[in-house]
Length: 412
View 1 (tube, one colour):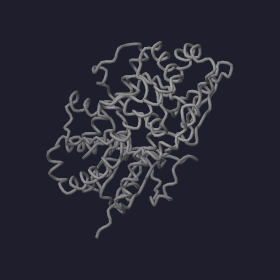
View 2 (cartoon, rainbow, N blue to C red):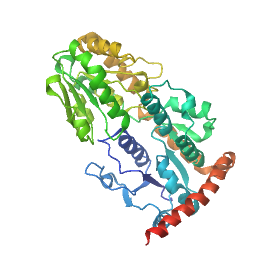
View 3 (cartoon, helix red, strand yellow):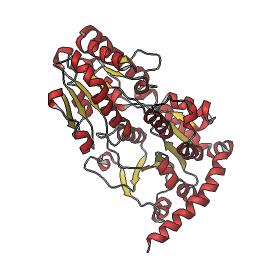
View 4 (spheres, rainbow, N blue to C red):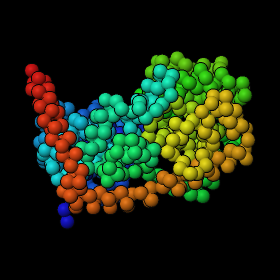
């Protein structure tokens, strides 16, 4: 029987301890491992000390180059059945090469989140304006949606983003696939091992500081939330964790105000299980937030905003409170921190959200079956999405010759 091959092309090498995007990538890789695929992960980025040791998972690693025909030679040798692009920028760079040299490979885009949505919201916050769908029609949206249209299937992590793509941009549901975080079920045995309300103390926020929404949230906590909240909880500390903290982050550390910058957490979940609450007054962003998944998986209630909780709970109750008003946010945080019964109820809500909306057994088998059917019917699928062929044709002309020009230029 012919061995099935999948190629992941990463914007960076996955760092599951640094970001939700890295954790998501490892979940996708595990899904293919469990279906006995031969997996290759390739990236033009440099590795960091925190890059996942993929070789230990049985994944072959391949260093590739931008704007180089060496990638063409590599993919001709590999001949993967499926190619997964990690974000639209990667598809822009390598998609035309995959289509040209491996035309029968299924091209899958993992969006992570909709970048154009996040950027539009960021612009509105920066300009102190209200967000509307009119803000979405940007050059970034043109690039990202063109990438979605060129691919055979795009993985969308948020139901809200599915709705925007289908209703606002009229993207066919046939080329979109909702695939949330893929989590282990929270069992009663695990719940019994969690630290109790009285065994936990203090508040935390956690987030990769390369990601702009996280840095903005820390600034908002420092200037808008903590001055009010520490008056309500004078003996409580707020600890800020996150990878890649620059000097501008570190200089916010202020022990006199109980506002402490802790830097990188080697394990988000092992760190989080010691705290009573996660506080995340996120002002802009997209996708779904891995920090709340980690909180629910460790029995840690949270207080966040509408944007922070977007698309995460469905019709279920949140594992804490959702408040956009700063005063209400502080009041609800203090109430949840001090009320054990309320805290236990919030914790139970988190268990239900994970088990009903993110438990991986609900998604993995259907996802892999969908890919197999799509592979068999690829010609028909592409004919029905003929705009993909149009975009790919023009992309292969423009991007191809720009890339070839850069390659020739680099020789000198």
